[in-house]
Length: 287
Image (tube, rainbow, N blue to C red; front, top):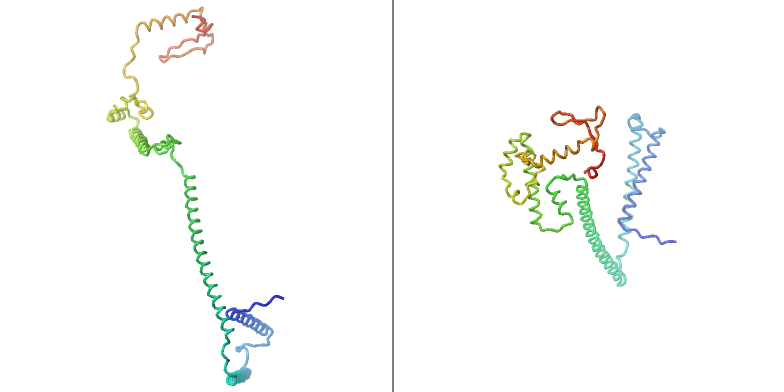
């Protein structure tokens, strides 16, 4: 049979308190059952005579209780007076008490050290959880972030992907992309009038782009007639004669045949129509 563990004073008090609480609950339930059965009547429901009898009985009961308590107190005091004084504590008992006290001190010290370690570990855990939440939120923001593929930063990052360059080079590239975007935006804000766009283009004076042959890079957003040929191209007489000879050669009946269909025709820009014609053979063989 296992040895019963000795309870401390605090545990004994708690146990007694719990026992008293249960006893009071039990008595309360008994009292309520008696009220339901009619064995006990409230003061309101009894007449004056019964009330006087009850009060007399209560007084007698209180008197008996006080007498019992006084007798018990007198007996206890007589026992204390008759008891001889305690003998001095023996050396062995004193040593055992000292050992117990020392053990308690050591135990408290160990517990304090362990509590400090636990507090330190809890603090580290809290910081680690906080850091993990921080990086988790950062990852989710990066995952759900909608980047503009046409922004200067995105273009530079795509251009320098897997390439190690100096920070100054990256800044210059970013400056160029940002400047290009600002010029393009300002150009588009001018509307559809070519005159304003032309003045804006002339105001920029892109001589350096012309010098380094980079003017073609501005074609995507400078869409007025700056890149169109201003003067008509001169066609030499010799070239025109060659062209006429080629047309006459190909229009000979021995080299081609005319399509018979009513819808087999081509319409020129001037509104003239010509019937479609098909070559008998390849140009290499006909020549």
